[in-house]
Image (cartoon, rainbow, N blue to C red; front, top):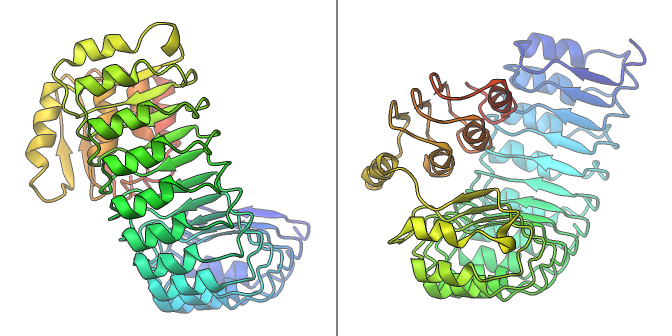
Length: 433
């Protein structure tokens, strides 16, 4: 055991007693990876891990989805022995601003490449500490989803000139407005940025245009800009960006884009590598889709979603996206079933639901996509039994990453085989299921 390099005890109930035993071990001097996520570890156990002075070779530490508070987080953030640490995952714990600040202020982890702090109540002060940390020159992936960074915090992050190796930046659900978005869009250091996610913020035209006009991110592969306040002006800025020649995935779902914006997007001739495009839940009409269908410059497009727009004749729209130009299109969704449309419309003026029952509604694969993207993060129970959903539909549902509270998923009496069930099993978000 003295040569042990990796220890994985995830998704058990080792609690503080187990974590203390692990932290007290003085034999595993070669340990490089320690995975203790989903184990009911709280401050006592985290402090034992954080104060360990043996693991000088530690490169990866996972303590997400536990009960760690400020004391435990401070102990981890104060560790000066893990000089080789490359990956740190601490999302979904109970520490607040004080504990988070200790982690993001660490000056020892010079090799840190990936930091995941999703749902850890980071505020503006923590964002300032992150943005001013000049130690993490090797940082490649930063996940700060579902915190409280706000515009002031994003200004500090956007002004950072340290992370010239940054590849992936996840800033979903952070109350970001125009000022924060402008700071991000104005950054000229992240020359290797490949992915930017800003789902469900409060960004309007001014801030989004700054991002759409960025000329630095020549390696950008995916941009997720759903659930904001984007209009035609933003769509025009994004559509006219000729630098993003490597773009593969673009989501502008649930915004306020109309025909003018849709036409501007349809005019783009630079995204020849585009594979996935989502324009669902905007204000686009049939006329614009006729225009987009004539674009010959997206030969690799495989997935195109335009659900819940202002279409008069969905059947004729579907026929537009056929032929040689669209020969690689595998998933095209333009309308959901009437039953699902009625349910979603009825819920628009209601509080976010925690339970949704859709038994015997005749739902099919396209409906599964709409559900995945439309139901709120508060969801705890989803019952889709006795429908027509098959493996493709369940695969789309399994890609959901927002239902963090999901406890029950009913899929009996559909058309799902072992292949579909396996996709469900690979979802890492539904830890309470």
